[in-house]
Image 1 (spheres, helix red, strand yellow):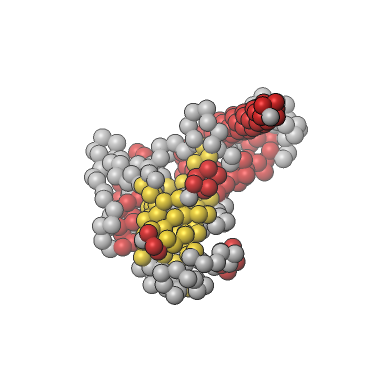
Image 2 (cartoon, rainbow, N blue to C red):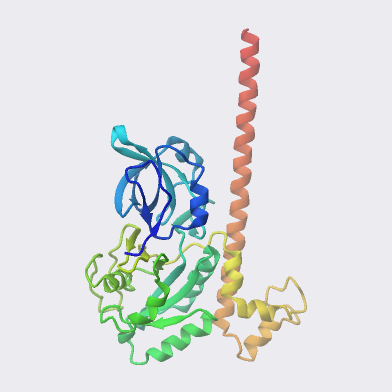
Length: 365
């Protein structure tokens, strides 16, 4: 396996090798001396993380300081480990700077962001042909992936489920812009060679998509063996059955890495305004010609977007999706602001309590 070499450390081995390591990470890690070694998170099981070091994996917890900071390691993160040789254990004490970060907003009233995976070069948005192909869902995925900083690729799996796969690919390309769209059959490995260019040595790819679109089957196809469990397809809706329950990073034979994720029916957008503009760049470009800068593309006079819909240059369904996601992003932004205000209020309240305790202490003296 063509892994890159890390700087020498005083850890359990003279040299540590890990996929995806580069000079920037080496510089960030260089401030650590003594019994510290770098690693990369492979998976998480509640309060235990599996971390890759020097071609093998170890189990580690996290330090109390890191737990209090709220920055918990995600799959794909490069981390700093304290090697407690006398206890035969490891503790994660810090997370090195992330290059890219795929996240989503938590459900409900919380304004917290949940990190799905980190340090990804390319994200395969996996969908399937047939009844499960949903363009509106793909638009949502594209918005989140663009915001992550990684490059999106749409993979239409199960191309054998439709008699006209080329038509399905064209439908996807109508909303995908310049994003590559690749039709494959992971089960028969047809078209798999078209994805190999994205999984070069030292590169990391993540898979996202709904349950049953064939992500685990695709993982197995890359390995030529069953490393992930799969289940059959339901006949009524042509969907596979949910199998993956834990995010996990796998090392490919060529030195690349691939991250499998549990299926997500509808991913929350979170703070994805930048990705939203890229996912709907066609509408954003036409909107520059609207009469009003704050045009909502509803019933305003001189709306260039509505004109494009009437002329058939933009599908009505796509504009409806644009306006729906824009409204959702506005709501998420408002929720985040409320969360920040609550945090500041809590902080100020804590300061008041501290001041009162100090006065009481002075009075007792």
